[in-house]
Amino acid sequence: MRGRGLNDVQVRMCVACDRRAPKRTLVRFAVAGDGVVVVVDRGANILGRGAYVCPNIDCFSEAMSTYRFVHALRKRSVVDREGLKSEFLKFVDSGSNFEGERKDG
Image 1 (cartoon, one colour):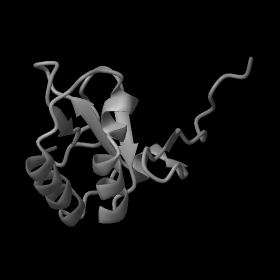
Image 2 (cartoon, one colour):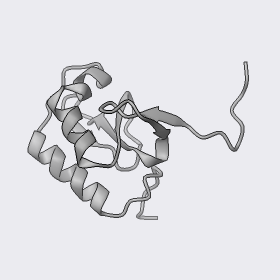
Image 3 (spheres, one colour):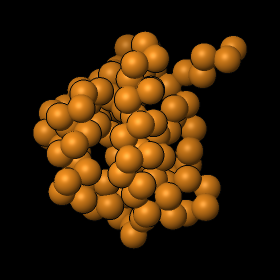
Image 4 (cartoon, one colour):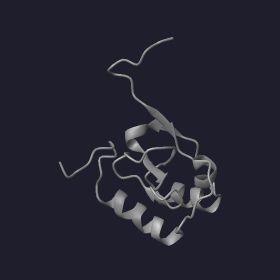
């Protein structure tokens, strides 16, 4: 079994288009601490299963319309479609580096 080296890039798959990409280039969604509501995981620090989506509205819309978040997260969750879309667009438009790093320091 091969260990991960310092230069190995973690790869994840978009739940909408099935494109594989470096983890830091995708937007992560997770179930919030209450265990029910799906949110954008801005700092990639919410424990548990996550769902990744390309940072574009087409993939986000596809994931929303086909319940791929619920399938990927493997639990029944409440998805506030408009709220989640707004949060997603703010995150993408913020110029985030998508590296899972907090901008506050």
